[in-house]
Image (cartoon, rainbow, N blue to C red):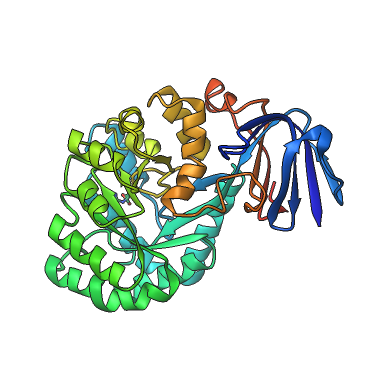
Length: 381
Ligand code: NIG
């Protein structure tokens, strides 16, 4: 069935040739965008929806979340707001709760958060394992994630489980754990950071995953400068995420590579770290994605709009840059060209704002601006 969405005041296509259109329309045919152009030239369709001058953009592509979890870390957040520092070790609290939860509880929790994200305009979402940290628990997380998320990442190397020996744990991650999760995941990731995995351990995990045919991602340079960015670039990871503390050499390496620098503004704020230097990265020529990092510890939000608002107001990205980074940039971080764009052939993932332009995302901070959402051509809101 074809749906004509017309009366679009401002249409962000992210397509370099189509650009941003005024008084536009688009046609969705099943799960695909069939036509984009001026409203006056729109073809007929089975159903017609007039959005009365509102802005339309591709659905958000949230390329970094950790949503297979149970439990709550409110107390840790309160302690942080009272001055305590964020540390990788907090992950262990969620690991304990996740291991204790049933499959049904984990699935229900994941679905609740994905629905929350969708209602705010997210139409493509990556999520990770990483709160299981045993072969059985990581495999279970991967299997559950694959039933709901668009993209699934294996993050067995999130933390050395309390009491385990780091080198033996890395052996397990690179061997039996990788074997068990591989059927359910497209990506592998490692938390390359003081308190998690060092450079050699991280490289071992990434190389083992690449040998299994998985794409690579890295959590790097979150809590201080370190080897994460350089390792990600060297191994042609699709993305290095966090990028809060970057040396000039890191920025140069990202600018001359195809590794996307994914910034996570809600996490920087929630952990009371400085905001990642997105402006510096963009000015150097790096590709930047913006993502939510939704997780119970360091960034408990599914709101991509909040991340875009922060990227504009506090990280000095322009509106167009921030919107691109949260849509096409996220797609690039997942090495996908079918989402993050509104052009013929793209997935029919459409976000209609309750506003005449994307500028309102920053101009009206904190105001819920999602009016309607289609995902794969199906109206979600
Ligand atoms: O991306 N940095 C590592 N992992 C998550 C945090 C997970 C947690 O604290 O539970 C992150 O911020």
